[in-house]
Image 1 (cartoon, rainbow, N blue to C red):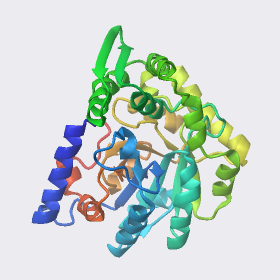
Image 2: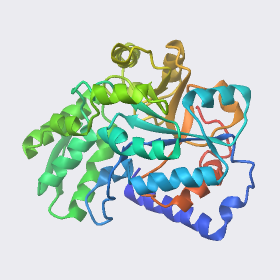
Image 3: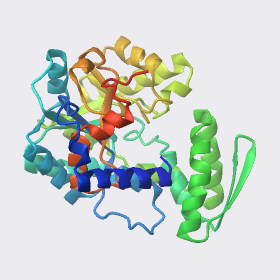
Length: 352
């Protein structure tokens, strides 16, 4: 999401909160519940003036703690993924919330786990197996580090050479915006190669960045054995599956699942699509998740859960806890459902 888009959305949510507009639909769009999506938990939020484009993937421990408390205070039961599926298949009861983390970051174990233990609340971590294997390419982190390291960005994307000043934080934010979505539009291998070339020029070791943030297999196993945590699959290599040939997408899903089963002794029952937006996971990928017998699969499509999702368990929407929106009152606005009703044009299920 482009920066201007995030600012407009934040203003809209704040306006809903201050005016009470989010209550205009009553409880009709609260649905049965929500799946919260997170990635990382970090000790301190980056200031707005910093160059920190991946801040959207980071929340502080205090914010996570406050959200769990507020969700329970609003009458939501925090449930495991198995329980979520059971309730969707049976049409209730609600309201309930499931908390999920994507990728498999070390801070999920070190910082998030103690918070869920404090609240005695279940949660799930979808692990891309290349992370604990030390093979991950977290290209978005590598891109941020590379732009931070240079004063001038020069990058070839799809045959076009992009030039952008990168002296100040403002320059660097502009450089990020000028290349990020162009990269996302490329085929996966071409995108990652373009970032690796920039990283080499900037003197950045992307593999070292990934390994510094990844959970170890010992940590993944500890979470798997913990009564509050569910480990789900997230492919092996974190590719946008819809951009891959079908057989390669299927193999990456199978490889990630098999690697987790080897290390944990159990086959994961739940799955998250990498990136998870409409351009990264659609009906073909939903069918692949069904054929691989996942009990559920989550997207990053925006929305709450309704009884109708019992017929679309491999295309579930989520509510993102975005690092740019660390205001617990905005979470209450989102749980009311009005923003998602407007976003999805009053469709309860958005799988097209």
